[in-house]
Length: 278
Image 1 (cartoon, rainbow, N blue to C red):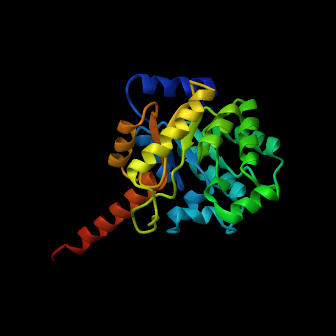
Image 2: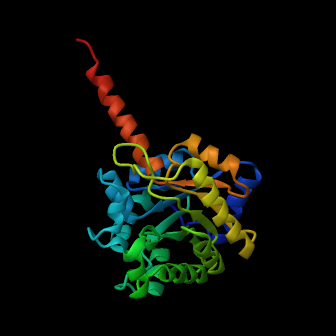
Image 3: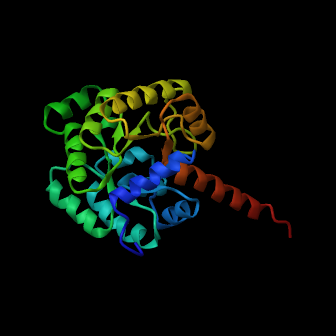
């Protein structure tokens, strides 16, 4: 980054000021330096880089980030070299795989802070796994509790924490661990060429997000809550959810911010060139 990142208190004060002014807090995933640069130009409040962004911008579904195609935490370190230098003043968070058994997590978090990251998010997350496979992960020491612990360690280091949560119990646990910004996740983003085809309805998403928000503020009233995923793919979708929930103050978009706009823009631009008459 061009200068030292703002500290946690400054970042949170800025986010709360945004909410107080009646504007949504918007976070954006960035899989390339250009994505980050453009998101900042658009006025984004937080930029998050994690391994899924690399796969997404390579034309693969975001769930590639949960499969054994690469070292998720190392990929974030590599992507930092591309993203951090082009971001002028927006806080950049690292997507951290909290279940990684090959990282001493306290030292890794220190390394991320030294690189210029302002905070962390839990991704890849086992929260996206379900069924017997998820149960087996929990039973064999690779469960969501390690992601909660990662957030607790990050909070001890005065890093901004913006974890994904998938149900009210996780919302409570992450808030108790010191989460600053909670992101209720309602599934893989729909729409576009590589979006999910199976998702909740928007009104089901409203109910789920509200339940997670209510669980979190019962633990700590000042936690900031954003929505993410599933059918909440476009600005109109986020508007629908924010208008029908109480105390949800913004949206975090990854596919929504960098994949869907890129798909449209490049496709339409090429079509326009192909329509040239000569």
